[in-house]
Image (cartoon, rainbow, N blue to C red):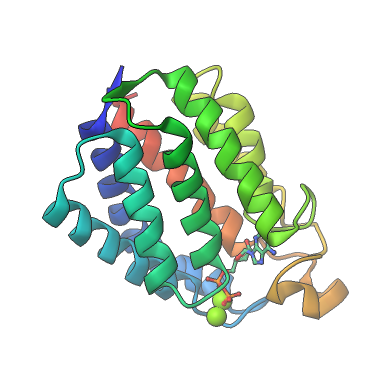
Length: 199
Ligand code: ADP
Ligand code: MG
Ligand code: MG
């Protein structure tokens, strides 16, 4: 079973990975965006880590809803409300249980990803974070490691796609040939989840 401590470890691991990969995320956002994805998420997750430490929420659902709220209030770009919605809606779906199973987390994350799709209007194949999130959540039924691999593969598979949502879509065909920054950071979230699970 996964308790609040597990979810705090997940967010701490995500913060560390975002810190480590911030320059790369910003570099990916340079040819097809406005070169701020790494700094956006770094600011957001730094705030998440600080708030979780200060408030120490006691349930998995409370950890994720608090983290989501922080992302929404500190990240100016498109990714803030989208990741914020992902975590908030996932947290809400977990309710106020003290511990949840991996299956319950997978189900809750599905609700969160559906909320991201509803908010941003992106379908799989539109070259966004959705292209990593959807296969990752599908694979989570198998294991945390499988979800991480699926997210990585989903992120890499955005390279040949033409963007249909977000800033990159303004470039039309010129968005082809670049990996999507948001799909890349979504894969980091699942790498952090695997780390938290100790797999
Ligand atoms: P901004 O584009 O406002 O500068 P970021 O650079 O932080 O925001 O985030 C860009 C990422 O957000 C994109 O790479 C993409 O994955 C994701 N994104 C943008 N718009 C959407 C959308 N409508 N639906 C899903 N994801 C989106
Ligand atoms: Mg950007
Ligand atoms: Mg921006």
